[in-house]
Amino acid sequence: MTDNKNRTFRLEQAGSIEHLKMNEESIPEIGRNEVLVRVKATSLNYRDLALAEGNYPGKLNENTVQLSDGAGEIVEAGPDVRRFQVGDRVAGNFTKEWFSGRRMPGYLEPYGSHSDGWLMDYKAIHPEELVKLPDHLTYEQGAALPCAAVTAWNALHGPSPLEAGDSVLTLGTGGVSVFAVQFAKALGLQVISTTSSSWKADKLQKMGSDQIINYNDTPEWGKRVKELLPGGVNRVVEVVGPASFPQSIQAVAPGEELALIGVLTRTGEAIDYYDLFGKASTRTIMVGNRDMFETMNKAISAHKLTPIVDTVYPFEKARDAYEHLKSQNFFGKIVISHEK
Image (cartoon, rainbow, N blue to C red; front, side, top):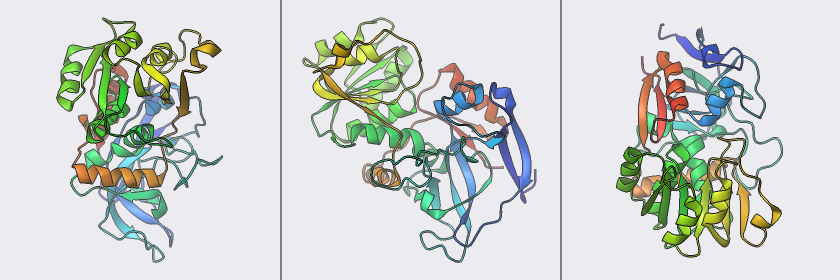
């Protein structure tokens, strides 16, 4: 691979990680209102694994460059660009054109499925779809932000922001859940976390989780939450899906919120209408808009928060990063470095 070429990973067809193929392509030319980003790092989300294995419920264009999350340096800017300049350190917004306000139909078009994503060395992009990275973060840390961090931020804020002294339940130790713990502690919230292993419990404790429940040892963990915090929590960051939803309903306090994020499972116990009636509200989280991203970055800078990166893989080992994600034996984010 030479410096004047653009390495990419395209998903030739859905169904297997083996269909991810590395290519050598031309560096894209930019338009008058575009910038060229030298991508320094990308990160994986469960969505990326679902896309590769053919389990993603949404749209997937054929032979698309993968990954929605990336960070890098602007190395070229068109003459009409005013938002950024050459040398700026940036990350990409998860979706195109969702800059503020409520999500409108057609705005949820994530990179890596509807259009080429960030698993490439050079990306031409409109500057409105970028945000500046907090100065204290590395590119590897910055690449962890667009999907998982913004999702966690949205879950804790949204129409009804949590306040100091409120409580939140996080499930597992994937990217969204770990970010939720970090943000919650910065906001002064009480945190109850679930996990399945002692080594992950140790890490959660070091991050500041106030109570930790092993869901293998305590299958009725929703009831356990109410024993630890009578009445239940103010918010559940529900990242799993149908398999955990009945317990999440048990854990949330009446009138409080279930932030629905997860599609890790498709089956679970049937939910009766009266399981929810008069108990809690639900809100579906579709990551978030650019305003949320920028507000979150200000908080990250103010609190000097650093994303938890489990492992960094070199670009050519991108498929190994996918396999690591599939193993579920990680804590935080799995990142790919694009440095040669």
